[in-house]
Structure formats: C-alpha cells, structure tokens
Length: 421
Image (cartoon, rainbow, N blue to C red; front, top):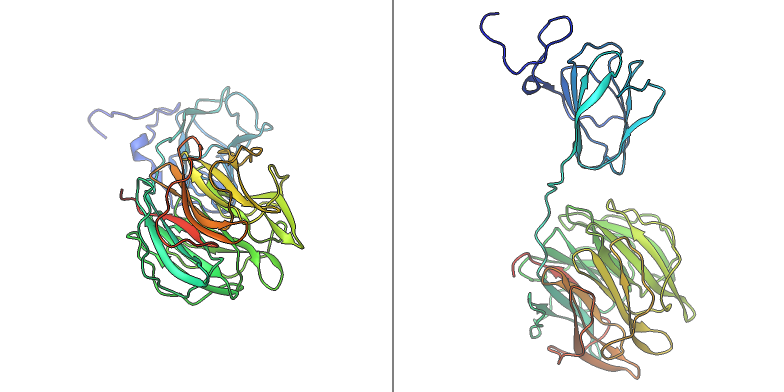
C-alpha cells in the first residue's frame, strides 16, 4: 500500500483497522441474541424481544463495533452487552451492562486490557419524526328521536358545520377514533353490529365495511402508537364485554383479542402521552358504575384494571388536549352530570373538577386545532336532546355553552381527522 492513510485507527500491532466510515453494516438484527464482530455495524430491532449482544472474546486496541436502536424500542426491550471475558469500561464481565433508552446508538471501541470496551459515543437520537397535528373533527351517527347517520364537520377553530347527509347504516352508540394520522373510523353500534365506516382526510364518510369482531354497541376507542393504529374495546353484547379489536394504520379492523379488565360499556376513552390510550369509567350492569381505568401501551396492549379516580359514572365522553393529555367529562350517575376529570401525560386520572356547561350525557368529544378539544350534542335528564357545544382549551379549561349547530341528538360519537387547517 502506498500513499498516506487517513482517518484510520491503528491497532496495537500496527495493522491499520477499518475506519468508522468503512464499517461493514450487517442486516437488521431481530433475534434475541447476537455474536458481534469487530469492524461491523448492527441495527438492533427489539420490537418483539430484548437482545443479548456478545462481544468478541479477543480484541485489539482500536477494534470498533457500532450498535443502533433500529426501531426506537430499546426503552421497551433493552439490549444487554456480554463482554465475553473482556473488561467493559474498566469492569469485568460479571457486571450487567444494559442499554434501555429508545433511540440510542453506541460506538464501542476497544482500548486495551485495562479499560476494555468503552463507548466513544453513547448518544440518543432525539430527532424522532413527529406526525403533524390533527386539525379537524367529525361528529356522526346518534339518536334524534330515531337513529340517524348524519354527520357534522368541525373546523380547526372549533366551529361545527351544518348537517351532512348521512352515509352508512343509521345507528346510535357507535364509537369513533382517529387512525392513520389524518383519518377517522366509526364502528359498532346499536342493533349489535360490527360494521365500520372510514372517514377520509377530507371528512367524507364511506359506505359500510363488512364487520369484523363480535357485534356490539357502546364500545370505547382510541388511537395509539406512532404510526396511526387504533383500538376498539369493551362494550355490550348480550352482556358486558372486555373484548378488543386493533385497527391498522390503513383502517383494517382485526378480529377479537381476548379481554382484559372489567367488562363494561358506556365508558370514556382517549389518547394520552403522545402514543398511548386510556379507557375509564363505565357501566357494569344493574345500575352499577365504575371509575376503573385501563391504560393502553404504545403497542396496543391493554393493562389490567387500575384504581379509579373521580365519580363512577357512565355515558361520558373523552378527548385529547394539550398535545399529550386527555379530558373526560359529563356523563350520568343518578342523573346527568357536567363534572370533568383531567388525565395527565402519564395516564393519571385527577379527581373531579367543578363542571362547566349544561349537564348531559351521550355526547361526543374529539381533539381539534392541534391541541384543543370539543364536546357537543347529548341528552339531559328528562330526555331533552341538545346540540350544545363546549370547547376545551390547551390547558384543559372547559368553556361555557355555545349555541349548537346541526340536529340536536344524543348517543353520538366523534373523532379527529385532517392535518390541514
């Protein structure tokens, strides 16, 4: 070899090692174990499982291995480094070395027998792609004196439009949620059905899609994850249910998943924390209501029951606000209510806060305008139907009643859609 050698690390033997830019990058690793070799770079995908990485049993100063969190999942499924008889940052290999921060990348260089392997860099890639904020919302279906399929669009300022001629099977007790980032889906409903209706990013409701999953009504739903998935859960069949159905980022409803948590219907549900969801409150039958909550992970797994906060009730509504929090409000317990419970970005439900606006149940709620929420429609004690609106600012403050637009109705649902203001 002739000419100067630049940007290389010399081994102790004097042999020129591969430069960082000349690393041999290997195929993405999804296995639970990996035997790493010097001079290689590895993308470690721990979406489905943790991974133990065994380093070479012999090494020379300047040997280099790079490990990268391929799917930003090390925070869920960590990697463990086995230094295979050599020291790691001055400690022998009896020490446990875990890396459990999502988005992390490690540049490991062997420095010699005393210190052994050491990270020359140990960084977290904070530039995680973030989807644009959802701007608009849609209310659809419900009961006006008979079941209906009308819808009303909400603009990015919280203004509700006039009735849009209905599409899909007229029904009440549907559930709606965002999916795919900028679209919405309504599914299930009265008559114990499992049909669904997709809403595109222009707010157009599609015709019925053949149902998947157990037919039921009064179901909860929320979006979760970072790529636009959603989940429907709980509801009423011939009795109360805790079944769930995942929704893909393209709006495909999956078959039933075995239930977790107390079976119930007429509950509240919303996303929180940026990529997780919550189901809370509900009716377990015989006029018995609960304030139990079940959190949903960013992979769509429903947790077991957690101790509730706030007044146990049914027929409430919930929506995200403030970018990473949620609000649950209104409902019924021995009459209609207007109390609210804020949900923190870690899924903690706060105690009751004094109500604002007309006490009612059976309304819908959704996020809109990047970081705000809207509650609208519903029924009052004595069966009076309203089209009243209450906007929620990005601090979770509920505004007083606004004059409604559209046909007064109850047992409706709502969902966010559209990145466009």
